[in-house]
Image: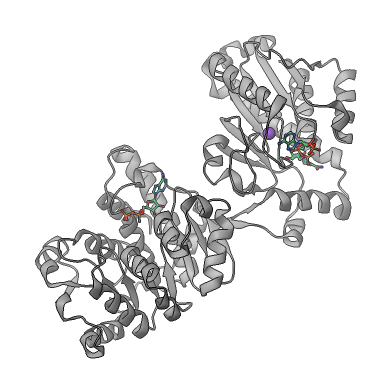
Length: 517
Ligand SMILES: NC(=O)C1=CN([C@@H]2O[C@H](COP(=O)(O)OP(=O)(O)OC[C@H]3O[C@@H](n4cnc5c(N)ncnc54)[C@H](OP(=O)(O)O)[C@@H]3O)[C@@H](O)[C@H]2O)[C@@H](O)CC1
Ligand SMILES: Nc1ncnc2c1ncn2[C@@H]1O[C@H](COP(=O)(O)OP(=O)(O)O)[C@@H](O)[C@H]1O
Ligand SMILES: [K+]
């Protein structure tokens, strides 16, 4: 498990470390600079064939370290000094108003001067045929939109990096990226690698920040989890080692042991969504899957997925009259887990169907797609929400549920998803390129697996089935959601390795999940 923090929380952790624990600020700055210098040297000696060839003559390797006036800049001066000491042609550029420089910054300048490190303050032309540019302009202290001189400098560095083919290594955060939201604050410098200190910053894993950060490495520079516990964190994130926590399949289990999933999905002319959800629930390990759909879909589902039990209804018989939905009550009583919504459509009968299921279901339920759209257009249905419900909206559906534009949801996505789930006491999976999951207790999980291969029709239906399969295997709503999203992303990555990022189909995701879950 990894923990991500906001810039504000990281500042408090800095403070706690310095003031309560007693590690001097300058020691942290030294270790931060060392971690970046090591990363730069790794790129020089291994990552780049041209550079490793010239490694024999390190003086020919040209490194520009661009420093701001805060402690991010202080880290940068340390990077310059260490690389200078190791024999590289390291040039430290000091930008901004010297009067704003921090104490650590000034101390590091003195040390660098004493060791003969090349430092310059010119801003008009930073060209220099650089092999590596180290970005130490702004870290977690970035407080507002970047304008004026700094905007020019960052844009210049961007151009130079492109022109020279230089690798860019960001110190703590790519300058210009907001460490909490991932927003570009006026302009930002795109990195190949970001070496961030202590804990991942949420903004490095949310788009567009995730694109600017490149590969992210979290370096241990001396912070302790004691401070993290005192200060708190923003969100957590699963990693591969957490998969060991997936429920073990009992060797003496039967299909009842592994749970019965009821998939209420599909409409006239729309059977695919029901199929993908049902298939994925089976592929994730559910014992028995029943599809409840319109009569027209019976033949096609039975042919595509003979392993599923198929039960059908005539939509014309579903009305506001209570007894018209009695069959749904019986179906709900049978299930251990319910999936409600994929491909249901928006005809008027769907409102009665969704209401009846929400009212009569007492087991964990994944509410997706048209189930969500129905709730969005009939908000009174939220009165049936319980802690057993997982909502899986993509950003468009979330915008409908919250009655606000997507741009507003993205202003602070972690707060958006957290506010929704705590308002309604549900688990909310807000699907995006970086999916966020919030549980009713206010914990937010940020997913880092997956790739753009998953941006394709049917992919969301597969996720719904995966979460249902994990619920059927006995996981609780929060963990089934977080693990389901993580596994779904891993399936996307392994599907993409096989079929290429353009060629993956939803059915491939369902197949890949079989090996992962
Ligand atoms: N001991 C520690 O504290 C440790 C800190 N560490 C490192 O320090 C970093 C945090 O340092 P920090 O707090 O000094 O902030 P930083 O990111 O350098 O930026 C602040 C400067 O930028 C300026 N500024 C901000 N926004 C601006 C804008 N839009 N446009 C223009 N200027 C703007 C702001 O100016 P001001 O607002 O004062 O005018 C100020 O001068 C952290 O990311 C990590 O790298 C590690 O070494 C571990 C130990
Ligand atoms: N660029 C991306 N990177 C990672 N995951 C993505 C990306 N684009 C989409 N996804 C994932 O793919 C799924 C798409 O779901 P959804 O939009 O509901 O699809 P559908 O309705 O077609 O089934 C979501 O889980 C989403 O997080
Ligand atoms: K930076």
